[in-house]
Image 1 (cartoon, helix red, strand yellow):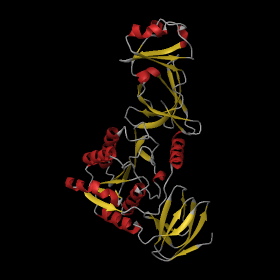
Image 2 (cartoon, rainbow, N blue to C red; image 1 turned 45 degrees about the horizontal axis):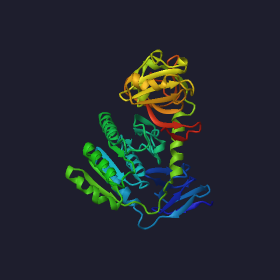
Image 3 (cartoon, rainbow, N blue to C red; image 1 turned 90 degrees about the vertical axis):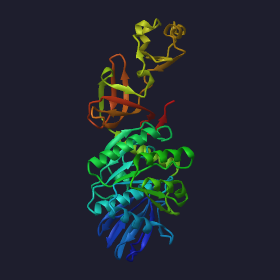
Length: 415
């Protein structure tokens, strides 16, 4: 494509995948300046507005499906920029952002962070979206301490991560709120201000509104950015808490991601944190295993079960209502029918060795810091857990999720 000339203050919208080379002049994207010879990439799931800060020339390399368009007169970008500058100039300590899916929450977070850095501040960003995590891996709440401007949150590295164990917030709202509040306190303690809280896009029903309301009641941010005019009536009442409510429009013409693209982005994040992670090991008796019922019950000596063949039973435990057996292979056990009566439980659960392989987990150290990991296998005979993790830490707790990852890091839900 030929070089595109832009007059000062002119704006263009680019839809990826594409790369942009500034041949002459200076432009900005989400508050990050690009000058002569600078280049930047637009991912296929992203779109950006490029604004010329002086007469400029840009060389675009467009992949299939990429587009360059003019910016509509009603596009809210300049309003976003103006409000973001106002927020940063007033030096608010905590800023929360709510909005629907693909409404621009992450982009506005980055705009705030970039302007804060330009003003010499030390911002922090909390990524509270467990499903479309950008800073850390899926199933984690993550926090970054940006030291340089970026145009995509995925370019930031996590300073802290906390495991939620699910890509859906619906069943984990209290845990998410608790972790986000903890991160806000840590960021303020570390003098990382402003603290920018980027929430998830679940906001289309009563449970989601109750969740966001609880989050605001706990956090009491100085500012709440509401993206979408249709959402303002639901959040304007929080001004009674002393929160400054700022309602902004959402661009009508913007990149939206389908389910497959979202799955692909999660897969990329799993791969980033787990690909080529070294194999490590820890004793089964040296860690606490959480979120896995078979390891929460009272362990039973397999010799006391009274079943045959006895050597096929690798592990046994009992909870209030279930007897768990881990077998080396699928086999019919003699005496199995009597186990419920003998151990006074209404249910039995059989697991075959290998059930744990490639389960996505959190590895927690003694400082209660959490890191993504992947179970390779559990050797029940030698009571050893083999796992993969890029971080060389001594495990204290291993938290299981309900997700397994294939060899190419695609998700599989565990029943």
